Image (cartoon, rainbow, N blue to C red; front, side, top):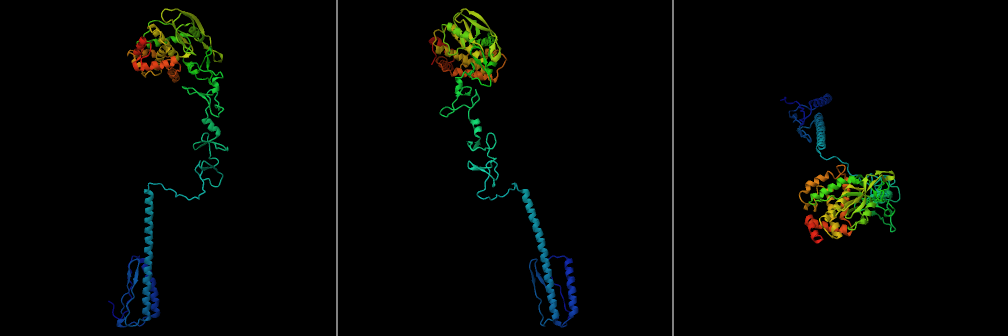
Length: 514
C-alpha cells in the first residue's frame, strides 16, 4: 500500500484477448506522451489526504465496452487531474477498438472457411448434374424443326406448323433439302414428289416402269394370287411369255427358256426340270413305293413315257375314255392301244435360249390290262412332274381295282387328293396331314426310302420348296368343277373318314361319304 498523499494512476482493466506486443507498444507510446505532460505541468494541487483516487475500470465483453467515470472527491480536481482522467479514457477507448477489429477479422475468416467447406461438400455429394437455368426469349423467338437450333434473324421456311432453316427442310427418303414449291407429305414426313412416287407408286415387275393410271385416274394393275407379282394389265395381251409351270410372267431383265412347243420355262423351274424318260424313271418308282406304303400296291408294270406337247394332244384325241383338264393337259393315263412318240435323249441349250437336239422314238403301246401307259409332259419341274405322276397312277389304281363308271368329280377329285398328299410329303416331310394319318403304319418305313430317290441332287432348295407350295395352292384353289370342286369334296371326306373308308364308299356307291 502506497503512503498517503501520493497520487495513484491505475491502468484500466480490459476484458478480451490481445497480444502483449501490441499492448506494450501502445503503453510505451502513451507513457511518452504522459511524461511530456508531467514535465510541462508538474504536480498541480497534489497533496491532501483526501486526494486518493479509485481505479478506473472498463467492463464489458468483446462486442460492448462500458466506461465508468471515476468518482470525484469533494475537492475540485485540478487541471492536471482532469488531463490524466481524459488520457485514461482515451487509452481505454483505443484498446477496446483494437480488440473489436481483431475479433471481427477472426470471425470473418472462420465464417469464410465454413462457407467454403459447405460448398465443397455440396459439390461432392450432389447426385444430380448441374444445369443451366432456363433462358427467357421473346415470343417471336423461332427454333428450327429440323436441327432444333435457334433460327435467329436469317431466312426460314414455315411449314406444317413449325419453322425450318432452308437447308434443314429435307426429304425423308433421300435426305436432300426440298427446294421445290410442291412436295408430298406422309404423316409428318416431307418427301420430294419424285421420291414419294418411288416409294408408294407400284412398279410393274415385267417392264419395271411405274404402272400407269386408267381413265378414271386410278392405278390399275394385275397381281398373281400366290407370287404377288404386280404387272401392267397390258402384258396379259402383248405376247409376254408366261412360265408353263409357275405361271409367272417373264421379266424384261430375265428371259425365259423356250421349250420349242409354244411353252416357256423360268430359270427357277428349269433348275429341277425333268427333260427325258430316263431322268423320270427314279421319280416314277419312288411314287409307286409311296402308294405301296399306303397299302395301295400296283401289281402291274405300267409303262411311263415323257412326251412332247403335240404327242400328248394326239394321244388325248385317240383316247375314248377319261376326262381331261383343259385348256392344258399335262398327263394322261392311257387305256387304249396307241403309238406314241416318247423323248429318249435330253435336249441341250441352243441360241436365243431355245432347246435343241431332242431325241425321240416311236413306241407302240399294247393293251395288256386296264391301263396301257402313263404319259407325262416333258420339261416340267420335278415336284410338278411327280404330282402329275401321282394323279395318273391313282387313275390306274382305280381301273385296276375295278372302280367303274365314276363321274368326273369323284374320279378326278380323289386323284387330286393323292397328288396333294404326295406333294405335302415332299414339301413338309415332318408334317402329317389328314389323309396321311389314315394310312397304315408301314407307310413310314417305305416313305423314308423314296426321299433319297426324290431329288436328283439329293436335296431341295428353298426355291423348289416354294414351287411345291405353289402346286399345292393350285390344286386347292382350282376353279373347275371336276378338279376343283371334286378335290375339295374328296379331301373333306378323307379328312373325316380316312382314305380307306372313303375309297370303300366310292367303290360301293360311286360317291363320297357325307
